[in-house]
Length: 81
Image 1 (tube, rainbow, N blue to C red):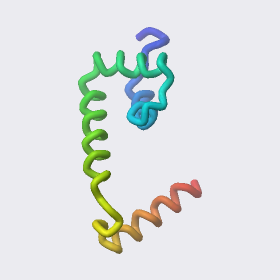
Image 2: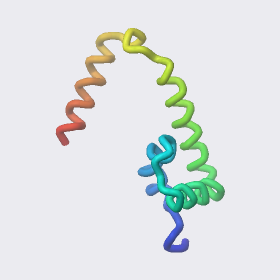
Image 3: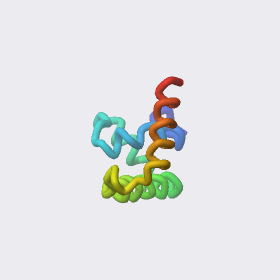
Image 4: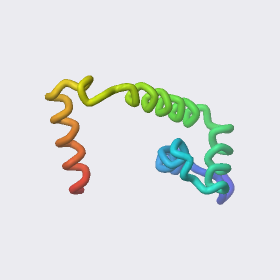
């Protein structure tokens, strides 16, 4: 693997920035070059796109109160760590 090649782990760390269009041009090119040679990362990216698409349709009213409370608590704990 060349020094400029992206690892799967690095791709996972950059995927949100990629989906939001926040990667620099060189980083986006590295990201997309990795995708051309890695079927697993292509599947991962597609799963994330589908998740974002699906979750983007939900409103707060669609989430049952116990689940919402659990999610909010998890995010608060995560933020503290």
